[in-house]
Length: 499
Ligand code: AHR
Image 1 (cartoon, rainbow, N blue to C red):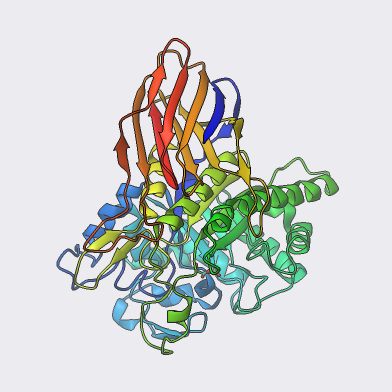
Image 2: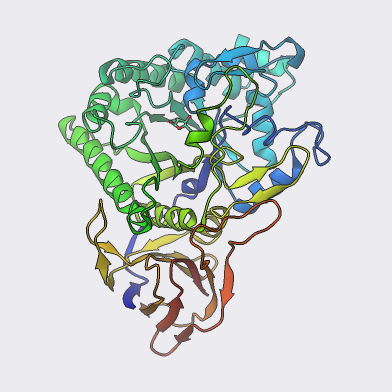
């Protein structure tokens, strides 16, 4: 099978905001306790954080981490998680029906974020709490001192403010499963008022309003418009969440799911622009895709979890080769929409639907999805080029016209690198990609790596990494004509770097 691609240095989509390589840590399952934090582990640091996990997170290069939820945040009193650890209350977490010890709270998490070179994207509770608790939290975190909440922080040993810049106004408030689920008008009003007082407390912050929990919600569309009608001028971003499954074991269909993600992004951007027009507003609302991933492997197991235990193993999907391809297609989709998607969070980061897994007292290891994310985060920063492609397409159970080649190219002018990310969705045939590249005369082919495995269900484990990128040796780039020829193995994730 063959495919053609044309790239021109002058024709671009937009700049990648590095925050699209964000991730997420929720107080859920073993993400925090026995994930990032395991004080009795042999490799724990002075605060009890696992150094092996810190190293893997740094390898992923995650500029921003959303915290502390997720569903968890809608019942969370942030005050429970600050001050002397031995005085912190143990609470019933109604989101996940577990016991929350509050040994980790905002100050410890901020310190962990520093150690992994990330910023914190902080979420406030707009379920059981409201604008008052939210503005108090902004004051506690971001105000230098001399007021009750900022001095409380200083009293807790954190002299300098955290200066968190990005704040989520609740989580998935359209979902009936959410603690204190709301209608669009109810949520829009409370989000507008919370944003107002939070920004009065610290005018430098940006806020994300909750969009629909997913595009298949019955109120999708109506919810976004309803919320924006109440809060357009107060919001900076609208959130999107999506999780894909392959319950039917239909791989061609599963690999096409990123088309749905693309439509979702374009639809929400359209709704934001519709309200902008209606309001005669000059401001543009951009998108925060703050939860995305594959999630389905753990559902049956999770149904058996005993209630009110602490940090049970939950949402511990073990990812296959084909999951890594879907994640790769999702990453390409986010990059292709860089003109509107400014923040995105792979949900989640450690143990919970995560690229990094840990064993209590044992090693930390990389899932299959670790690699596409790491390579996109490392090489996918710069200007996104337009990628006109000509290739064969196929139809699946749910989608039509799925191109066998999913691809995008990013030019990093500072580093003088041009990187092409490409997924070959063809399960049986390799794909000969021929690219005409204009405007990069002095560039050479630096490396082509491909991740593939004859067994599409192959997984990694603590003992063995069956799925990881391998260098391919046969591609060519003719510097005279700018003609690149590379072969993409069947069912593969590829990174082709020119420089
Ligand atoms: O990421 C897991 C859960 O998925 C989050 O808590 C929630 O926001 C979403 O439904």
